[in-house]
Image (cartoon, rainbow, N blue to C red; front, side, top):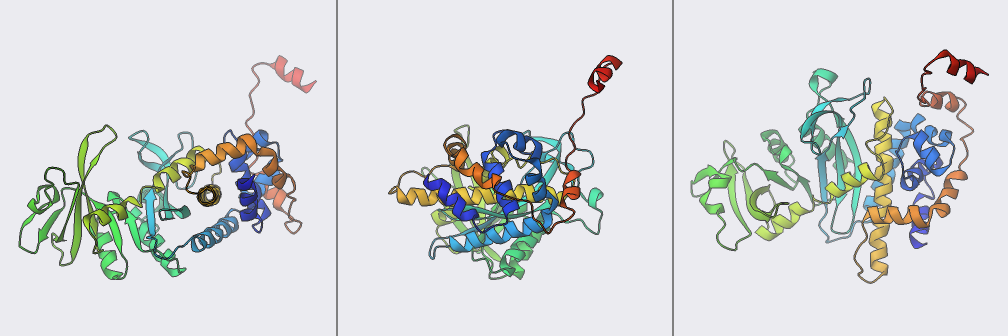
Length: 396
């Protein structure tokens, strides 16, 4: 019952339309579109369509709430990373959906018809709070003037986070962003610290003049039981020195591999590895928002509604992640429950306690045309009749 009251307290002062949608994502077991959620938890579809009808303003409200949670959970002295990671939402049957394009999907390892949101999240050892997203699309789809690469989107997200005053120690990115344009961005923003994977083929030059690829550089060779080693070097055709770390780790197939990390923070090799590892919690966050909160299942055509749907899942994840952390403290160091486990507990044991919050929600009186705006989402499939007898029977 503790987790139920905590969730309700977190949602107490938020827009009722957002509250209804977020609780529906948490409680429904089936697909996460308005019709399916309505059937699953037994509430009116209109209560959910209202959320999508005001998608742009609701997305901004959710972002403000997430910023508030980020500031609330900041603990001085605990390293915090601003993490950016693109993902792919497969949309095999989409035809007219905004921002739809073709890109490589990590789950299938193939080029698929997808939406490509670039996620931004704030992460420390205690909490993972997703913040916002922006969609990437191919240049031939959006046009040359409006096109932004994933690197440009990442830079925009970082600048926006700094602009609103979010407090974090460094940016953590995977190897997809380790291009000269990203290093130029760091040089322009000298106070910005970063930890980023780099390709093993990247050529670096140490102060003693030794120039070689990271995988072949003698100063980064790991001997015997060494697991990590850091050197100071500069990239080829670049005058700025960075710290490069070689880390030996086990793969999923229990084999050994060596990966490389670049950073502008002066740390020990173990600290560099620990800093980069703060990026890792974004992966289970992305997986949970897809599997439990239906980031892949919204059927709206407009990108703004897809964004609002995903960000409602962000808010659900952030609240449950924070409450799971608080519950761990209350139970004197007991192992922290995953958000997936908390969701299962709420669905199985506390469904009735939360469903009342959705049922109590009433339509806003000041929105005269909201019913008409919501109707366009109600595109229920019509089953064609096979013969005239069926038509006559149904007409009777």
